[in-house]
Image (cartoon, rainbow, N blue to C red; front, side, top):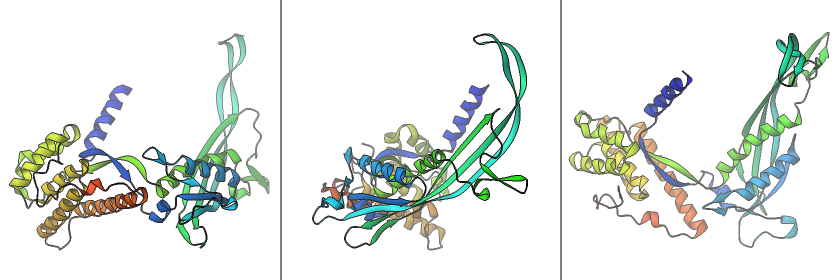
Length: 356
């Protein structure tokens, strides 16, 4: 029965997934100042478990790789290892416990109180246990300060969570609380700080969040299809739905259909956009950008409101940001901008960059 339910859940997920083509991508976060500051040191993180976090933060920086190579270089300002002519900075910050809740409750369980041998229980009895349920929320606010100028190049706040639950016959009441007027108050409300290990578990949640925001990464993106045509003539063409579905399993075949549909319906925004998705997945970001812009204009003309439909506008903005990130990578790494050398789709609609 469980396997049937699991299979049904997977089918629902597959049916609801956004149609498109997955491709390997090189993603640059929006804060380019943090990305460009590759010589870094780690200073103080004031607050609970600050020393632990400083060490893990530095390890996160040292282990941040892109295209298989380290992105950051740990620079010790005190020993003069900051390179000449390069931007350098120091990460520091503040840690706060934003919430700590503790709750005691009792439960009755059957436990073996007499054994005949290993794994052989002779007699069980109801035993009352006292249980403790705890939850901790933390906020970490790192900032990147430029070496030499003191300018804050990056600042953000990240949140982490941890929880713990335990039950014991020998547990004593009030372990996470304070007694007031004959009763206990628990957690921060009772003036009690959370256990150090729970704070550390919650802080560990934030390190990956910071990594994603300060350095480029290799990932997988999806060039998404518009799965519903605005104009009824295109919507009635069975090839449209077939091409949307084919994108999941046979992207090359799908892109060949989009190319044909583009010839048949040159002013259809969904067709123009979806051919742009093919160009994006093939690495022709200039061609994709051009088609996304054209699809947004076509969508705006059809709607009559002067603004492109949200999906078209979103794709255009995303591709603009993505190309800007690649240009930054080219400048920082000295790579050839090969992704700009594909032919322009407006003058070469039969480019081999699609579906090949």
